[in-house]
Length: 579
Image (cartoon, rainbow, N blue to C red; front, top):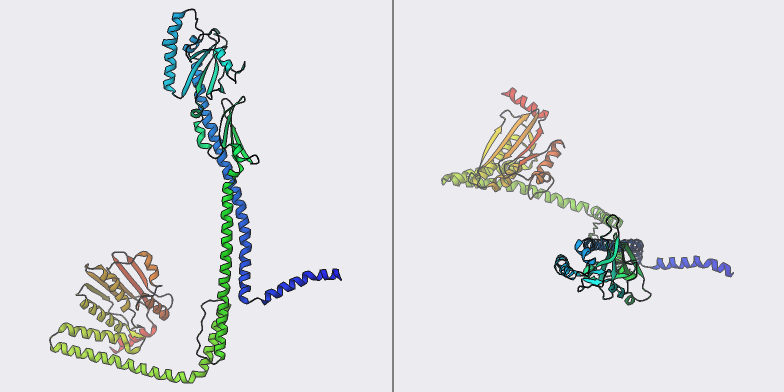
């Protein structure tokens, strides 16, 4: 029984968890799902980014340390070559060789050699190399001394680093007891002319270590750098290992100079090496924590938003249930909840339509009759007023007022067209002529109009107000902004291959190339180009429409064609027979 009970426990536990989840509210379920969905990829990306960043930063620190070692090694190479070259030059100098083998019995000659040649030569070296503290020649032939520049060989025995055989034919470097840096080598034997031989005499140059190793100061700020020869350590600076503690780990790289085989050892505490990694780790964890908080807040927000929409829909259903059939609901979201809400509104609208169909139809019929009556009254009232203005203007001798009233009367008669959507070509041209004369009077003849109308055009029906918006657009947006330049508007109507071709050309400001493509796609403030183009498409088909060409600053031309129907051709033949 116990084994059976143990086998049932995992299933019971899962069932209990599932029941708890089902008892949660819909909003909490959504919030939990959103949070867990965001948590999983965030955790994976966080761990991946941390590992990659740790690797990249460690490699970057390693490359920086390796570059520092290479820089230090190259700098030491240069320093060693410079001063070993100087030491070799001194060792091969005849003045140095002569003074080291000078016969001390000849006192006058020795004095002259030391004061007038030896000292003068060394002083010139000091002038060229002021960083050299001392140049000393050690004489093994005699105890003769001359200041610090000529000393007997046994003076070297007092140095801790000295041992028989440590000084050779090539320069050797040592750190003296007083802390100065010494480069020393043997002098060649002048008596052996055919065999390369070296005497026990030697020459050294003494340098200040701070001056010699100054090039290493810039690469040892956060690490320990040490310069060693096979015999001793010449230089050490940077972090003290005792300050880091006995258990602190170190990371080291080394390089070897070409001359002298010096070892440049650079050591850096792992704590310093890992500081960028630790900083980046803290930043990554901070970002992860911030993202977790953001996911939690966002999950709560979106779950509340979705549940609110469902709650609103339930509330609207309850209002309809209570008898409110005039309720209006709408959801712009195209998801399932939005579709459900909008479908509910469509169902409600259909119910109201079925309930009030007869009543609304009667009201709509009466409103239509009233609008039709107003449409008949208003134009007659306008024409009567314009006729009265014309009569009074003629009686008072105001010819311009009379002309304006006649033009307005013609313009509105052809525009209204008794409420018809189609008109004749003759009526449309009369409408445009009236409109242009009105505009010329309003703007004191700012522009001229040139007409080119084929006199043999057939009687053709076309959509009402198809030319006037194009002419208005040319004047308002092309000619008027180009003041004070004299405007010119060219209108042509010709018959080409069974089609009527309309051309409107102005010498206005033109249209920028980047705007031409959007003119026929953008709604304007009035009855503009897009509307005319769509009416042509609807009337004659998609193959017909406006064509716009413009030269910025010079001109704009709008052209379009419409087909001439067979019925129009029959009307032309009948008219010719009657004539």
